[in-house]
Image: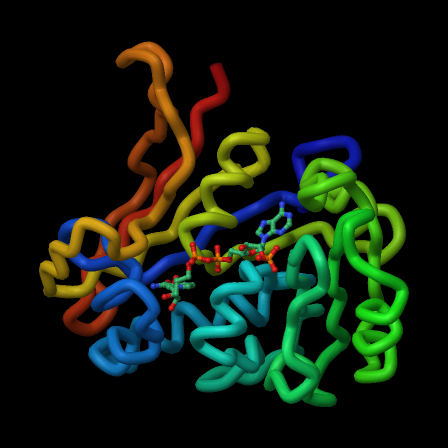
Length: 226
Ligand SMILES: NC(=O)c1ccc[n+]([C@@H]2O[C@H](COP(=O)([O-])OP(=O)(O)OC[C@H]3O[C@@H](n4cnc5c(N)ncnc54)[C@H](OP(=O)(O)O)[C@@H]3O)[C@@H](O)[C@H]2O)c1
């Protein structure tokens, strides 16, 4: 259930290397890393999906990973899929338009009516909110009030994660740690786009749980509101 009056409870779930990277190199699919997740970690990830009313990833993750964002490995219903993209630049052939679940594409005023029609022709529901970028707090309210979303899971990438943190919209993190070091300077990491002025400005989190799922370390963190 949500602890907030008009937005869902938001959990960020991510597979990260020891150095906090989301993938092997910039532009590479995270599916390459996910192949090294233990079965138990996959089950955990998919259980969180099944327990969520909706799942959101950034448009770049759809372009690179071409994810279905469905529940596998456990029994459960597929969450609503939510993709923010300023202009609605999602290929009509993307797997996220599969008939497995509803898909909401959130765009800003910069999306043309033609782009919006192409998305609706694929069966997507299109929500317009925000001038240049999608206004994420407004999107949260729309998901809560119009679609009944009480638990939202976000699964990256680093740009979307950063924008959600910037707006104070993430409540907890579940990290699946993978035994690799990627190291690339421009390789996407867990969060990008935050510019703390000093140590007081850092986002603070509290470790709530740590355990092994098969061979993978799992950590659960609570985001501390200042
Ligand atoms: N390891 C993991 O758990 C994991 C999970 C997910 C992704 N990944 C990896 O992360 C990488 C992608 O990360 P990324 O940082 O490049 O991209 P991203 O966060 O997936 O997507 C960024 C894009 O999402 C759209 N977007 C996000 N927030 C928006 C907002 N408020 N308003 C409008 N548009 C918004 C924009 O699309 P437009 O340009 O269309 O406006 C933006 O360019 C890939 O390599 C993927 O494999 C890893």
